[in-house]
Image (cartoon, rainbow, N blue to C red):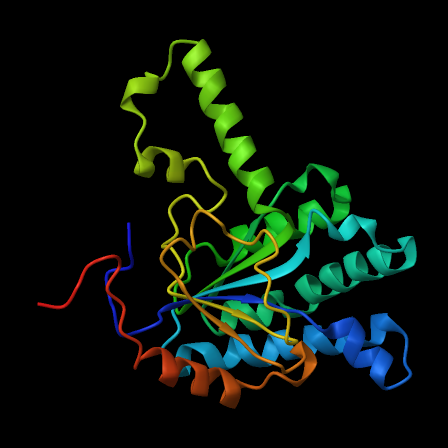
Length: 239
């Protein structure tokens, strides 16, 4: 279903791109850029409720990112774990509910426990709903949902003739979450990179040249202001 409000972007999804390039341009190792990017996440999360964002979804690590060097992958996983450990109490104090989407089975068990722990710790909060995609790929998500439905149908627990968009959406990682109103990608790339292909069917897109470590709350607020001026008809026409 299309978003209910045509003028406000209450759910913003961001493809956080450009950390490695930011560091490389300065002559530093790529992991320095990822650490700087994690600091930027904290700033954007804290600013989001004040500029009208209720749901924030961040693309942190894709199913394709395993192709990177072992050093970079291990470094990223360490950054994720450190972020959760250091920010759990602060997010809870600020009313941030944190969720994760993606296939957790390939992640380190310790990281999985940290993820489950902060989800449980913040489950009662709602000032900002923060969702982080780790080992997430849109096609992988759709396949996993389709397999789950196939098993239910084979066991006689689901009638394929009764399948609706709502029933399928409920079986995605984002089941129970609203679809994004706006998807932003930083770093100048104009690909969607397998991010929320089902959920973003009606979303508006914004591509910015800014590398993620330089992406500020002020730029985010400017993008939201432009979004408010867009004419969103969802396939219809004005009367």
